Length: 388
Length: 123
Image (cartoon, rainbow over the protein chains, first blue to last red):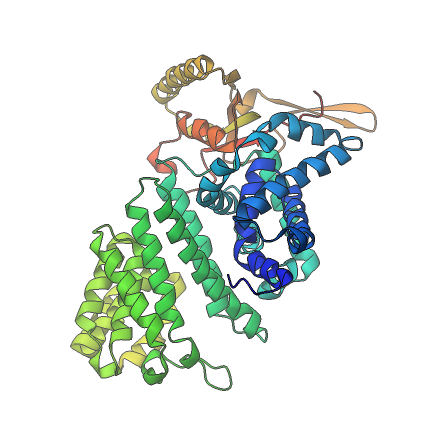
């Protein structure tokens, strides 16, 4: 941090970069989302006042956490007279004032993971998980989250209040899941991140700017999750591969974001996109991540999808696409996830590799099989685009 | 925290042998919970055919046969436990016997264990 910045600028920057860490630790210490948020804001406000005179502390994060917890104790004492539940908080949490700051600092990555897993607990409705994650983990304001989901701030606020109430009354723990539950719970977190990304990526309404920001938040979250899992040892190797896979998938899709709609907002198909406009930095990072994920040997669905996206990204022209490789990746994906939509995509890839005749045989064979209610309506369209 | 674990299942779907095996396994689970100090109570319930519903209508008791709604899955029993948090309650709910029957796999509503936290207003 440049030393010649005014104190208020430094505090502002710290708020941008570190407030979620301070918050995650305060939630664990206090055991209450709302009190923790207030305490966190008070700590930053106090920093603004005090650092002018006393100078910037050596470890600002430690200072903020420590100040935040004493602010929380003050708030609890002040409210005790009116609210009996406050006494309980102090009684249940002797650690609030006693835990040495060093051990609090060493728990910061774990606390951030706890916050993520709590907000993405499967016992919460999926809409609540999405809203809570954006609000509590990413630090977006209620207004920003509401705008992204195109609902009123009042509705969103109510959703968040209900979710927080459920966390408290149902006893959803502020914990990193144990090793047996880790893969499943990590899947739930990845699902939330993927939904956030799609919400932003497929935004078709007027509020494109705000909704597109969701895709960036999703990528930021996946990066954070990846870094946190790397810093903490939870012995989960295979799900880590899927974190890489999802991150890669989102980067590779994002690299085409500018080219996938025309000036009227209509979708431009992959083969018609201006590939020179694809973001090469994202593509390079995406491909590197897919390769790392594949190298673990324990690939899941996100990694395979990223692998397919990487094949498209590698081709500077649609005619250079390695369809053979794409077909093989779809074969693997079908084994992980038997879905008619994937089977149909595979058939299209076969048509691109071996010609429309052979592709159509696969498509017709599918139509003769199980009822494909969801996709039978798109089948004739696919037949046409494959070359019927 | 105290949780009531409610066990819902289609009572017709148990064979007598399965029901017997379920009782044996359930008893074992209650012993395990008791050793950990997590056990407050548990019991299977007789089939819904033995149930009676009571309502008060215009000051009079209205007594009817069976539960209030016709559903495929019925409340078949309960566990009352005392554990640290919801994840521990879920862990125990997943151990309640009968949950593993494959034929229920396709329907998320059938053969379900519901964890309900206790409200402490009476304490």
